[in-house]
Image (cartoon, rainbow, N blue to C red; front, side, top):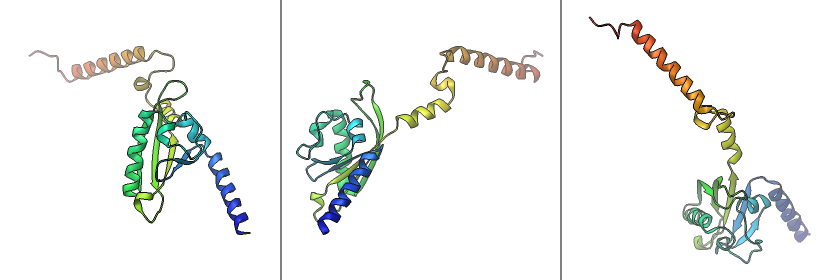
Amino acid sequence: EKNLTLEERRNYIETVLESLSTGVVSLDENDRVTTINAAATRMLSLRAPANGERGLEQLIASENWRVMARLVRRARRTGQASEQAQLAGAADGQTLPVALTATALRAVDPEKRGVVLVVEDLSELLAAQQASACPFCYGAKDGKSTQHMAVAIWFLFGAVLSVMGGIGAFSYS
């Protein structure tokens, strides 16, 4: 009865983790991957399946591990740590902007604490911010941002000259 309840709970948690678009990775005290969902596998561009026998360092790009290791160490020391980063190794050769949060798991011995690492893809959020921002700052969709900027500058220059002329800034007396 008790084992059945535990198995049902484990299945429930695994189902929830797999349905998330946010990446979730749990590490044991030796940084071995004990749980990982599909979103984390995609975002971290894992080089091999995570089966609990290999450390995260062996599964992801070394430049990504440097960021993760620093975050995991800080979480073990303080309980939780967060930062934004650019992960290398995305499928299209681009970097992936992410928000990382590491939370240390409770343990009797602080040195034996595992960590849960949450990876949130920020690329859609950043794209939406850029799309709603000034076209001069992020480039007009039609590729004419330089032309638009030049027109705006000349318009402002003309307005400034007009105001200055109106107040007599160019009169010689």
